[in-house]
Length: 282
Picture 1 (cartoon, one colour):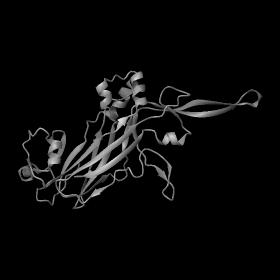
Picture 2 (cartoon, one colour):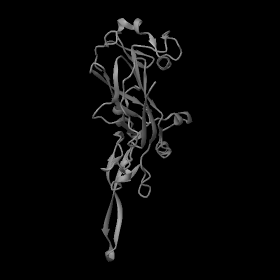
Picture 3 (cartoon, one colour):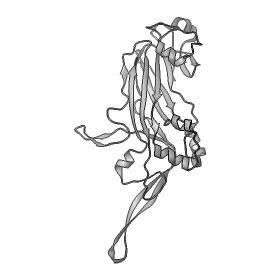
Picture 4 (cartoon, helix red, strand yellow):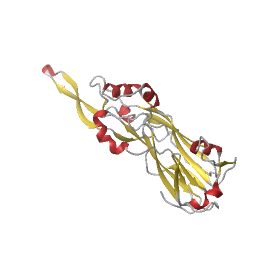
């Protein structure tokens, strides 16, 4: 992350402090002058009150950005992973969340900006046969909230980047092959053409025609993308709330493993599931 100068009177955005899992981008010498925090922020960073922060209704000096992952995992996918050896207790099954990462750009009123990568969700949910292969993608610690000093002009998805979801299973792509049998009869069989190992997969927005009509449903509805939020006042808590379901296809006529007909464009477009992103400020 980049350090930027502040025009808020709370000093430069220089030092970084990790408190209660929240990254505080603050100037060490000015903490005592910026300790009037929004109650919504205090509930996030110090729910027990042990930090002894002062709280005022109209707090200055900071903006909180948090990602709230309320998405779930399709039951068919969970059942498959348990079938192949992934052990889950009832509590762990209820707590499963898709592993999602995104990069958000926080732009300040002076034109400078910081890009922060957020990652949230269950990091241990993967086909055991591919656990070692998946580790480079899953070894990041959760990071779902950050605090920056004012003045913030906007928070938005980093331009040119995608939101990604971790697909925890191998996907087998099949192709339908036609052959001529005896008497000229046409026979059809599915043959495996490609195997995609567990990895992060970019979520794509529904495809529209020139009139704005959806012609191909993908992972995110056109009204469900995370929209930029602007003109933020000091003390604001910005929340990006994720809803939806991680899912993969199963071509049951061919395989019991996650699989699909690669000519089935509608199925291919929905690999990874369906999600909604809501951005709000309080």
